[in-house]
Image (cartoon, rainbow, N blue to C red):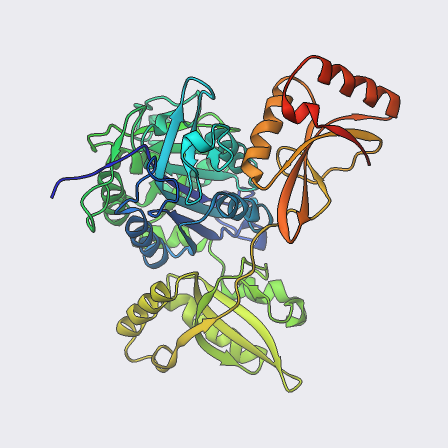
Length: 513
């Protein structure tokens, strides 16, 4: 069976690890502010509505689930998986992490599916989503997500270290700075220092690194059930490198996957600092575990985060060991439930040592009595959650709690952290303006609205986005300019209408704020 080319296939492996940077005496002292939580957002799309332009694929979800399994079980990430998301769901899920991630966390995003590149009109690449329409029906690319939008939104995430991995046709079009980064091995600048000092130095630098499966050419989807060539090498590298390195970095991973025939590329984007290098993780060697302890949440962090009482934990919310609320997933593995704080602390201490996966806590009230559930994982697919539970039961056969553990399901809210009737800048930060603006259009696609707003910004015209609801459906308004005087706003709009036949401008009108 021959391999199938991913017709302009996209597999963005957004691996975003966010790691704390304020250290006291290198890595010798750890405070609650030095904690580095690990997150992964894994996205796969193999079903497309935009036929005949975008045929269904064979491996993206298989690739995504396998990579998620590696990050969960071998690196201990809190992992969220999206399967066949539409364009708004994909973009809004990334935006959600603006509220979740902290300065020193680590975060991974992997997206597998179709990708496209339009040199003639947009000079940009695009993520093709489940709901992306054929090009003849969507010349403006409203149902696609441009790389410029992805780059902008991801760059502004609060994490210091971010790594994107793109397994996609034409992935070299991610930005104009993409280049074949030939120094895939560590530079000699830190060759004389140990791994702890190396990690400490690298974690202080802001990292915005992207590794793609190729340049401006198609890449292979692969034989069904056997992974794409790039994903296969990526998975292999993530499993093999911990046996070869104490600290696993983006350059180590690139060096490993660069053997793929599609000629992967490594580059940088956004606010990347010189000499920065993404730290993927630490090996399970004695030295690697010693370094890992400096950053991972412990029972002490849990106790410190509560202060005097666990009442700091909101009822029914899901919290990590540092007390922060995490994005709710559809399914968790419920390991146990304790009726008092002391028992909870003892259980956390025991299973934090046993498991590579992160522990999560939910405080509930039953008949006016507090109970504390201890969860493992966090999944949006029931079958995948059952697979993880089965593996844990097989690995811990003598543990009574794993024997009795089960899948706990929750209603999964639609993620969209943009508030209704609130103005946002192009980095999706809320802003307040007073006076008058011009509403150019309203569209159900956030990605499309941001792309059009960016066109105005590039012409030094202030542009804003406002979310609203119409018939219980989300719409995103494009607002430009800000005038204190209504007459000046009217004059500006009349001048715009006189200089263009653009239907959006002809239908634009003045808004007061």
